[in-house]
Length: 204
Length: 152
Image (cartoon, rainbow over all chains, first blue to last red):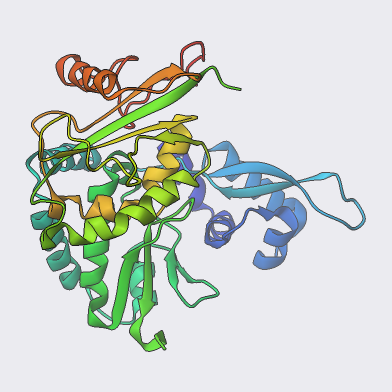
């Protein structure tokens, strides 16, 4: 399944469609995708449905409020929460991470783990915050309050099973990456990464 | 109305007395976190005395504090625990609490018209530690559906 999903991204236009959809905060329609990627609505629909059929996107239906055609549900697309990975030869770092996380909790080694994460973060530091966060897979965006929010949690599966520890590790890692110029804190919303970031330059 | 509610017990062994400087940050956050729980969707009840919390109740030992709550569903408890500012004290818990030998949290279903007791909660925690997760004593990591509800 993962191989088929990843294979579906080989086609250049389809990959552009995928990258457009996953960068959006809200589910998007065929028309929006067609306009953004400069392809026809029919071709956009073909690629979107192909991406949904291999499990890379999810389909939702939302009635659009008001205007002509209101009441007819629009077919919308967003990224699937299912993870796809192909690692050859077979590796299972997630299983290992879960075991290590349980062991850390059992002996109460969280402070040492956070210190290690901060050191690792410092090694990953470099350049301006936003592009660095993009490179690290966090999918950052600035909200109306100029707080940087992270749409993606790179550690999602282990964060689900060991939330306090993994969110703490992630916070320490990002403190290391971003350095003294930023205030990093936990401020979870319904979805996405729990870490919120403010530049000290923005503080009044 | 649902026929069952979810009971939650968690316990924590203090590194230092509650009125010590080491625990000051935890104690300072407690009213906010308890208030947040009270106002959370799906919250039903929490154990508290006249002081407004349960920190004076020590049935598990003089240095072990308890938190006993009731929720409408696993989802409502999960959202409060992991998707609110409650996550911040969870991240810092090792500054305030020492690890326990056994499980520190247990969940079980109970009829919606009754409230759990600390004695019953202690039995559920024992059960979880002795036999591992089951429908009678489980955790958020491996939740069980309410009686009479088919597993999703």
